Image (cartoon, rainbow, N blue to C red; front, side, top):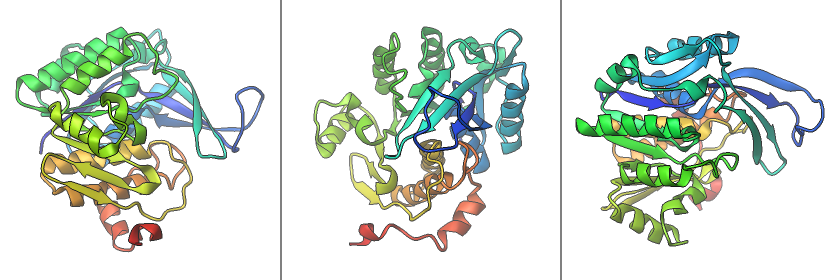
Amino acid sequence: MKKIVTVGEIVVEIMATETDQTFLQPGLWAGPFPSGAPAIFISQVARLGHPCGMISCVGADDFGCLNLERLQRDGVDVSAITISGDRPTGSAFVRYAQDGSRAFVFNIPHSASGQIGINAAAEALLAGADHFHVMGSTLFSKQMIDVVKIGIATIKKHGGTVSFDPNIRKEILDAPGMHAAMDFIFSQTDLFLPSGPELFLFAKSSDELAAVDEILGRGVAAVVVKKGSNGSVYYDRRASVAMPAFVVDEVDPTGAGDCFGAAFVTEWLRGANPAEALRFANAAGARAVMRNGPMEGASSRAEIDAWLVSAKVKPEALA
Protein backbone atom coordinates (compact mmCIF):
# COMPACT_ATOMS: atom_id res chain seq x y z
CA MET A 1 0.00 0.00 0.00
CA LYS A 2 1.16 3.52 -0.78
CA LYS A 3 2.26 5.42 2.32
CA ILE A 4 0.43 8.68 2.97
CA VAL A 5 2.16 11.63 4.65
CA THR A 6 0.67 14.94 5.74
CA VAL A 7 2.10 17.99 7.46
CA GLY A 8 0.62 20.67 9.66
CA GLU A 9 -0.90 21.80 12.89
CA ILE A 10 -1.66 19.65 15.90
CA VAL A 11 -3.89 21.34 18.47
CA VAL A 12 -6.25 20.64 21.32
CA GLU A 13 -9.83 21.66 20.77
CA ILE A 14 -12.04 23.19 23.46
CA MET A 15 -15.72 23.11 22.55
CA ALA A 16 -18.66 25.22 23.67
CA THR A 17 -21.28 23.06 25.34
CA GLU A 18 -24.26 25.25 24.42
CA THR A 19 -25.51 26.43 21.03
CA ASP A 20 -25.09 30.19 20.51
CA GLN A 21 -22.59 30.36 23.36
CA THR A 22 -20.23 33.30 22.83
CA PHE A 23 -16.55 34.02 23.42
CA LEU A 24 -17.49 37.27 25.13
CA GLN A 25 -18.62 35.94 28.49
CA PRO A 26 -17.92 32.95 30.75
CA GLY A 27 -19.52 29.65 29.80
CA LEU A 28 -19.07 25.90 30.03
CA TRP A 29 -16.54 24.27 27.71
CA ALA A 30 -15.68 20.65 26.94
CA GLY A 31 -12.25 19.26 26.19
CA PRO A 32 -9.39 19.09 25.61
CA PHE A 33 -9.79 16.92 22.51
CA PRO A 34 -6.94 15.93 20.14
CA SER A 35 -7.38 17.96 16.96
CA GLY A 36 -5.96 19.86 14.01
CA ALA A 37 -7.29 19.22 10.50
CA PRO A 38 -4.21 17.31 9.21
CA ALA A 39 -4.03 15.37 12.49
CA ILE A 40 -7.68 14.32 12.18
CA PHE A 41 -7.07 13.31 8.57
CA ILE A 42 -4.02 11.18 9.33
CA SER A 43 -5.69 9.63 12.39
CA GLN A 44 -8.52 8.40 10.18
CA VAL A 45 -6.06 7.10 7.56
CA ALA A 46 -4.27 5.11 10.26
CA ARG A 47 -7.49 3.68 11.68
CA LEU A 48 -8.24 2.29 8.23
CA GLY A 49 -5.04 0.26 8.45
CA HIS A 50 -3.21 2.32 5.83
CA PRO A 51 0.50 3.16 6.36
CA CYS A 52 0.90 6.85 7.14
CA GLY A 53 2.89 9.48 8.97
CA MET A 54 2.83 13.14 9.93
CA ILE A 55 5.30 16.02 10.09
CA SER A 56 4.45 18.39 12.92
CA CYS A 57 5.45 19.82 16.30
CA VAL A 58 3.80 19.84 19.72
CA GLY A 59 4.72 21.42 23.03
CA ALA A 60 6.39 19.62 25.92
CA ASP A 61 3.09 19.73 27.80
CA ASP A 62 0.08 17.59 28.60
CA PHE A 63 -1.71 18.74 25.44
CA GLY A 64 1.23 17.55 23.37
CA CYS A 65 1.25 14.20 25.18
CA LEU A 66 -2.49 13.84 24.65
CA ASN A 67 -2.10 14.26 20.89
CA LEU A 68 1.02 12.16 20.48
CA GLU A 69 -0.42 9.27 22.46
CA ARG A 70 -3.62 9.39 20.41
CA LEU A 71 -1.83 9.39 17.05
CA GLN A 72 0.51 6.58 18.11
CA ARG A 73 -2.42 4.53 19.37
CA ASP A 74 -4.21 4.98 16.07
CA GLY A 75 -1.13 3.74 14.19
CA VAL A 76 0.38 6.97 12.81
CA ASP A 77 4.15 7.14 12.28
CA VAL A 78 5.04 10.04 14.62
CA SER A 79 8.83 9.91 14.05
CA ALA A 80 8.72 13.33 12.35
CA ILE A 81 6.66 15.04 15.07
CA THR A 82 9.07 17.09 17.16
CA ILE A 83 8.58 18.43 20.69
CA SER A 84 9.17 22.10 21.39
CA GLY A 85 10.64 23.07 24.74
CA ASP A 86 9.65 26.72 24.56
CA ARG A 87 6.24 26.85 22.86
CA PRO A 88 2.95 25.28 23.98
CA THR A 89 0.83 22.94 21.91
CA GLY A 90 -1.61 24.83 19.69
CA SER A 91 -5.25 25.32 20.60
CA ALA A 92 -8.62 25.92 18.97
CA PHE A 93 -11.75 27.14 20.75
CA VAL A 94 -14.97 26.52 18.82
CA ARG A 95 -18.56 27.68 19.29
CA TYR A 96 -21.72 26.68 17.42
CA ALA A 97 -24.64 28.69 16.05
CA GLN A 98 -28.26 27.59 15.55
CA ASP A 99 -27.77 27.42 11.77
CA GLY A 100 -24.97 24.88 12.18
CA SER A 101 -22.14 27.32 11.49
CA ARG A 102 -19.06 27.49 13.70
CA ALA A 103 -16.61 30.16 14.80
CA PHE A 104 -13.07 29.54 16.03
CA VAL A 105 -10.34 31.22 18.03
CA PHE A 106 -6.99 29.65 17.08
CA ASN A 107 -3.54 29.74 18.61
CA ILE A 108 -1.47 28.13 15.88
CA PRO A 109 1.29 30.34 14.35
CA HIS A 110 2.65 31.29 17.80
CA SER A 111 2.34 27.78 19.23
CA ALA A 112 4.63 24.78 18.75
CA SER A 113 3.05 24.37 15.29
CA GLY A 114 4.93 27.52 14.29
CA GLN A 115 8.18 25.56 14.63
CA ILE A 116 7.31 22.84 12.13
CA GLY A 117 10.18 22.29 9.72
CA ILE A 118 11.93 19.72 7.56
CA ASN A 119 14.59 17.90 9.59
CA ALA A 120 16.27 14.53 9.03
CA ALA A 121 13.27 12.63 10.42
CA ALA A 122 10.89 14.49 8.11
CA GLU A 123 13.15 13.83 5.12
CA ALA A 124 13.22 10.12 5.97
CA LEU A 125 9.43 9.99 6.31
CA LEU A 126 8.92 11.72 2.96
CA ALA A 127 11.50 9.46 1.28
CA GLY A 128 9.38 6.43 2.16
CA ALA A 129 6.05 7.93 1.09
CA ASP A 130 4.08 7.78 -2.15
CA HIS A 131 1.35 10.32 -1.44
CA PHE A 132 1.27 13.78 0.17
CA HIS A 133 -1.92 15.34 1.52
CA VAL A 134 -2.20 19.11 1.98
CA MET A 135 -4.77 20.97 4.08
CA GLY A 136 -5.39 24.66 3.42
CA SER A 137 -5.49 25.31 7.17
CA THR A 138 -1.79 24.44 7.31
CA LEU A 139 -0.75 27.41 5.18
CA PHE A 140 -0.72 29.76 8.16
CA SER A 141 2.83 31.13 7.71
CA LYS A 142 5.56 31.50 5.09
CA GLN A 143 7.55 28.84 6.91
CA MET A 144 4.68 26.37 6.65
CA ILE A 145 4.17 27.19 2.99
CA ASP A 146 7.84 26.41 2.37
CA VAL A 147 7.53 23.12 4.27
CA VAL A 148 4.53 22.11 2.17
CA LYS A 149 6.38 22.97 -1.04
CA ILE A 150 9.31 20.77 0.01
CA GLY A 151 6.92 17.92 0.77
CA ILE A 152 5.24 18.22 -2.62
CA ALA A 153 8.56 18.43 -4.48
CA THR A 154 9.91 15.36 -2.68
CA ILE A 155 6.85 13.23 -3.40
CA LYS A 156 6.58 14.38 -7.02
CA LYS A 157 10.29 13.71 -7.61
CA HIS A 158 9.77 9.98 -7.22
CA GLY A 159 6.44 9.75 -9.01
CA GLY A 160 4.05 10.16 -6.08
CA THR A 161 0.70 11.91 -5.97
CA VAL A 162 -0.75 14.90 -4.12
CA SER A 163 -4.23 15.53 -2.73
CA PHE A 164 -5.40 18.98 -1.66
CA ASP A 165 -8.27 19.88 0.65
CA PRO A 166 -8.61 23.71 0.73
CA ASN A 167 -10.25 23.51 4.19
CA ILE A 168 -10.65 27.26 4.29
CA ARG A 169 -11.38 28.98 7.58
CA LYS A 170 -12.30 32.64 7.32
CA GLU A 171 -9.97 33.30 10.25
CA ILE A 172 -6.88 32.52 8.10
CA LEU A 173 -8.06 33.17 4.55
CA ASP A 174 -6.32 36.55 4.42
CA ALA A 175 -3.04 35.40 5.94
CA PRO A 176 0.01 36.74 4.04
CA GLY A 177 0.85 34.59 1.01
CA MET A 178 -2.22 32.37 1.41
CA HIS A 179 -3.70 32.88 -2.06
CA ALA A 180 -0.39 32.50 -3.90
CA ALA A 181 0.44 29.38 -1.90
CA MET A 182 -2.92 27.82 -2.68
CA ASP A 183 -2.48 28.54 -6.38
CA PHE A 184 0.92 26.81 -6.37
CA ILE A 185 -0.37 23.77 -4.49
CA PHE A 186 -3.35 23.54 -6.80
CA SER A 187 -0.98 23.43 -9.79
CA GLN A 188 0.63 20.30 -8.28
CA THR A 189 -2.62 18.60 -7.25
CA ASP A 190 -3.76 15.22 -8.56
CA LEU A 191 -6.85 14.83 -6.36
CA PHE A 192 -8.82 17.95 -5.36
CA LEU A 193 -11.21 17.70 -2.37
CA PRO A 194 -13.16 20.97 -1.95
CA SER A 195 -16.16 21.45 0.32
CA GLY A 196 -19.12 23.12 -1.40
CA PRO A 197 -18.19 26.64 -2.55
CA GLU A 198 -14.45 25.93 -2.22
CA LEU A 199 -14.81 24.37 -5.68
CA PHE A 200 -14.92 27.87 -7.14
CA LEU A 201 -11.65 29.05 -5.59
CA PHE A 202 -9.78 27.94 -8.71
CA ALA A 203 -12.39 28.48 -11.41
CA LYS A 204 -13.95 31.53 -13.04
CA SER A 205 -17.34 29.89 -13.52
CA SER A 206 -20.06 29.93 -10.87
CA ASP A 207 -21.63 26.76 -12.31
CA GLU A 208 -20.46 23.46 -10.80
CA LEU A 209 -20.05 21.49 -14.03
CA ALA A 210 -18.32 24.34 -15.81
CA ALA A 211 -16.02 24.91 -12.83
CA VAL A 212 -15.11 21.21 -12.76
CA ASP A 213 -14.30 21.32 -16.48
CA GLU A 214 -11.97 24.27 -15.84
CA ILE A 215 -10.25 22.47 -13.00
CA LEU A 216 -9.79 19.20 -14.87
CA GLY A 217 -8.51 21.21 -17.81
CA ARG A 218 -5.74 22.57 -15.60
CA GLY A 219 -4.30 19.11 -15.01
CA VAL A 220 -6.10 17.84 -11.91
CA ALA A 221 -6.86 14.12 -12.33
CA ALA A 222 -10.02 13.99 -10.20
CA VAL A 223 -12.29 16.27 -8.19
CA VAL A 224 -14.43 15.22 -5.23
CA VAL A 225 -16.91 17.81 -4.02
CA LYS A 226 -17.96 17.34 -0.40
CA LYS A 227 -21.52 18.52 0.16
CA GLY A 228 -22.12 17.53 3.77
CA SER A 229 -25.70 16.41 4.32
CA ASN A 230 -26.21 16.46 0.54
CA GLY A 231 -23.63 13.77 -0.09
CA SER A 232 -20.67 14.01 -2.46
CA VAL A 233 -19.81 13.98 -6.15
CA TYR A 234 -16.78 12.60 -7.99
CA TYR A 235 -15.57 13.96 -11.34
CA ASP A 236 -12.79 12.98 -13.69
CA ARG A 237 -12.30 13.43 -17.44
CA ARG A 238 -14.36 10.37 -18.26
CA ALA A 239 -17.32 10.36 -15.91
CA SER A 240 -19.01 11.68 -12.80
CA VAL A 241 -20.60 9.84 -9.88
CA ALA A 242 -22.94 11.26 -7.22
CA MET A 243 -23.44 9.55 -3.87
CA PRO A 244 -26.18 10.48 -1.36
CA ALA A 245 -25.52 11.17 2.30
CA PHE A 246 -26.53 8.79 5.07
CA VAL A 247 -29.14 9.42 7.74
CA VAL A 248 -27.46 10.21 11.07
CA ASP A 249 -28.09 12.19 14.23
CA GLU A 250 -25.47 14.92 14.13
CA VAL A 251 -23.70 15.65 17.41
CA ASP A 252 -20.55 17.46 16.30
CA PRO A 253 -19.64 18.25 12.66
CA THR A 254 -15.99 19.12 13.33
CA GLY A 255 -13.66 16.66 11.62
CA ALA A 256 -16.27 15.06 9.37
CA GLY A 257 -14.74 16.48 6.19
CA ASP A 258 -11.27 15.39 7.28
CA CYS A 259 -12.50 11.84 7.94
CA PHE A 260 -14.29 11.81 4.57
CA GLY A 261 -11.11 12.97 2.83
CA ALA A 262 -8.97 10.37 4.58
CA ALA A 263 -11.34 7.56 3.64
CA PHE A 264 -11.61 8.67 0.02
CA VAL A 265 -7.85 9.14 -0.43
CA THR A 266 -7.09 5.68 0.96
CA GLU A 267 -9.69 4.06 -1.30
CA TRP A 268 -8.48 6.05 -4.31
CA LEU A 269 -4.90 4.92 -3.70
CA ARG A 270 -6.08 1.31 -3.34
CA GLY A 271 -7.70 1.51 -6.78
CA ALA A 272 -11.36 1.38 -5.68
CA ASN A 273 -13.87 2.55 -8.26
CA PRO A 274 -15.31 6.05 -7.64
CA ALA A 275 -18.73 4.84 -6.48
CA GLU A 276 -17.24 2.46 -3.92
CA ALA A 277 -14.80 5.10 -2.69
CA LEU A 278 -17.53 7.76 -2.35
CA ARG A 279 -19.87 5.44 -0.44
CA PHE A 280 -17.10 4.43 1.94
CA ALA A 281 -16.00 8.04 2.44
CA ASN A 282 -19.58 9.22 3.00
CA ALA A 283 -19.89 6.58 5.70
CA ALA A 284 -16.67 7.72 7.38
CA GLY A 285 -17.89 11.31 7.37
CA ALA A 286 -21.33 10.34 8.64
CA ARG A 287 -19.92 8.34 11.54
CA ALA A 288 -17.62 11.24 12.43
CA VAL A 289 -20.52 13.59 13.23
CA MET A 290 -22.08 11.15 15.67
CA ARG A 291 -19.53 11.77 18.45
CA ASN A 292 -18.32 14.85 20.32
CA GLY A 293 -14.73 15.68 19.53
CA PRO A 294 -12.92 16.03 16.19
CA MET A 295 -11.21 12.60 16.22
CA GLU A 296 -13.70 10.73 18.36
CA GLY A 297 -15.88 9.61 15.46
CA ALA A 298 -13.04 8.30 13.30
CA SER A 299 -13.62 4.65 12.43
CA SER A 300 -11.80 1.47 11.53
CA ARG A 301 -12.49 -0.29 8.24
CA ALA A 302 -14.34 -3.06 10.06
CA GLU A 303 -16.54 -0.53 11.87
CA ILE A 304 -17.45 1.25 8.64
CA ASP A 305 -18.15 -2.00 6.78
CA ALA A 306 -20.39 -3.24 9.61
CA TRP A 307 -22.23 0.10 9.83
CA LEU A 308 -22.90 0.15 6.09
CA VAL A 309 -24.88 -3.09 6.32
CA SER A 310 -27.81 -1.27 7.93
CA ALA A 311 -27.06 2.38 7.06
CA LYS A 312 -29.82 4.31 5.31
CA VAL A 313 -29.42 7.09 2.76
CA LYS A 314 -31.40 10.30 3.13
CA PRO A 315 -34.99 9.85 1.82
CA GLU A 316 -34.80 12.82 -0.55
CA ALA A 317 -31.87 11.16 -2.32
CA LEU A 318 -34.20 8.33 -3.38
CA ALA A 319 -36.82 10.65 -4.90
